[in-house]
Every structure is written in structure tokens, then in C-alpha cells.
Length: 201
Image (cartoon, rainbow, N blue to C red):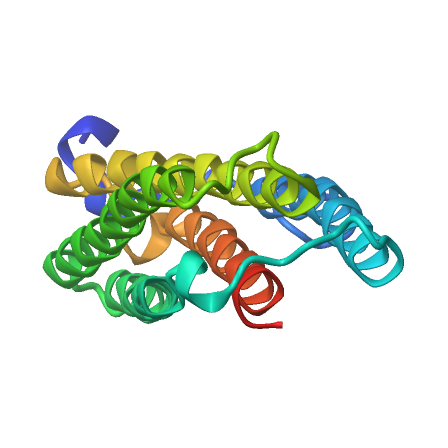
């Protein structure tokens, strides 16, 4: 019987490397290591300038819309939970569960991006722009970069969702679901760091 007629019994094609880690997972961790350096350099620069520059003026909490950002943070935390449940579902041979939880994860990501699209014009109206000062420059650079990563995660999960609807994922072929989860948790973790830095402290 051809592999096309039995998509649910295919063995994983992601063979381990000499390190014992599958190629896909190793590639994802290497990619995320570069992302850690990118966000780490921005965050460390923000902290150094905020603590050491007299020109670094932080707007008031009212101008920053802290409650809105807090709700957005909760949305991303919920999306991490649904991502975990999506992987657990396919590992337990429950493709329908994976599809529903992935759809919930995608929805949370889109809600987050929609709120940011509302928040940016609000910041501009309050006088916080990318050229208004050090805070504005860091705020729009870091949140904009993070937003691009959220969009990338949404597209990755959408790809998996479409493939799942076509019956291409099984407990033996769930490695890409796992990799999408690793990426999504990283994106959420970055926001958990950015939220207190940019909104609370």
C-alpha cells in the first residue's frame, strides 16, 4: 500500500543527528539561540540606557495602557497552554483535539496582534513615537520585532493546522508540531520579559 493512502502510519522522517537530537529540533534550537542573542542585545541595551542615561524618560502608566498590555500578556499565556495541549493531543492519537487546540493558539496570536495594532496608534496619539525619545525607539523596535515573530508563529501553526485537516499528522509524525511549540513558547517567553520592562518598571 502506498504511503499516500496511509498517512497516519508513516514513521517520522526526522532522523537523529550525531548528537542524538533530530535534525529539525537541532535546527530550531540553533535558530532560537540566534534569536536569544538578538533580543538579549536589545533588552540589555534598554536596561543599560534606562539606568544610565538622563535622557531616558519613561511615560506614565496611563499613557502606556498597562491594563491592555496585561490582558494581552494573559492571552499569550493561554496560547502557550493550548499549544501544549495541541501537542499532547496528537501524541495521544487525537488529531481532532490537535486541530481545535491549534486553532485556539492561532486565535490567541491573532488577538494579540490585533490589540497591538490598536495600541500603536494610541501610543502615537499620546506622543510616544519611534523618534520621540529613547523609550519610544526601544518600545517600537522591540515590540515590533516581537510582533513579527508572533506572526511567524501564527503562520507556522496555520500550516500545521491545514495539514492536520488533511490528515497528515499522527503520533509518529508529530515532530513539526513539537517544533512549532518550541518556537511559540520562546515567543511567549520573550513577551513575558518585555511586558514588565516596558510597562511596569
